[in-house]
Length: 237
Length: 262
Image 1 (cartoon, each protein chain N blue to C red):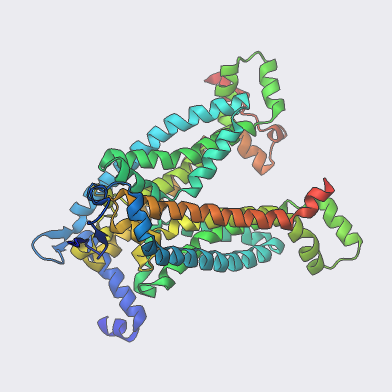
Image 2: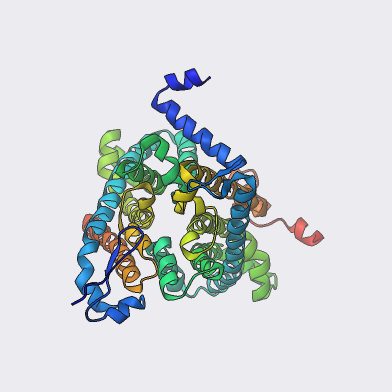
């Protein structure tokens, strides 16, 4: 049996022997090849998950803290929105590259850039959510003798939760998409797999499908959290 | 000078790399592999021209498709599901994945790149046009109809001007993502400003960094430019209402006088 391997530029190997070899040679969509080779997507997939979850978590902590500060000091909203908006505008390809002289190649560079992209979305949604809390609810809370801090955690944040989680969903799906370019910062992910063999239909279908599926799955998880956390809303209705 | 930079240590290294990148933008040099000249304003301008060309064509096509559909759906109050779904699906499919799916299943070249950019640009414009038209208050539309305007006149003279800031916000979002995605032209055989980033073995680290600087500057400039255009197309009535400086401002109507003279 001849075992024919063709080495791609980055060492992406395709077995061109055995059943379905014609399909692979024609760069086609080959279920057999996918079944035999799915294991090569496991590591990139988990790299992608790691990049997304870490970046969104760090971004949420920073943006949430900034939003709480800005909630009591309205003058902060403009400058913070302007600064995070500028970061958000810089194209990700450029951002991953521009950070390299400072943070080098690897996860750090990728995560710093991805965190920067989440800031605007999360900050804006937390601020809007807090601003939309009905004054009546705040008056009632005040009337019951709640302090500023109690009012924030027991009244304002729960009422703003749907808006905050909506921001988190947008940030998470956006980050999955941007992390597909993290390989330019040397951080791997599904994008690296795509870029290694972009003309092979099977490869694009699996790597692309996993990226879209990951975005949908994270979206669904946050949506479920939102449903569970805002049960009181439907009880009131 | 060089002594100062050496003393700065890692900061100095970063500064030197950025300095080298800026030199790459302005002055051609031999490529990493030798043989040909790379960099310099001439080559950067070639990349920039292709980059802007595919982006502008894509934006024009996307606007021509998305604005009329959004106006119509918004005016009739139909298709909310469509407008929202398009934007949700648009966000869940990463630009890189969309581009590579087209590369593998359709082919390469500037037309495929432009098509992908159009598909990326449509959702924000469509959704924003729809939302902008829907949020024009019922009373204003009633008043316009009471004055005897036809459906087309209501769209053109009342809904469209009042929706302009929101529509332009959508155009701005799209333009930024189109310029960012046009960077990924190399895999589909289009030499945009991303070329040095995707072929580092030829352009070297300073070429990669130099191209990234140019991309970042162009995108920030486009964002600022469209932001200014957004200010310019905002009807005076809305601006007055935002400042709270006018009694009629609360209704955010365009002033009659300007329309009469037009």
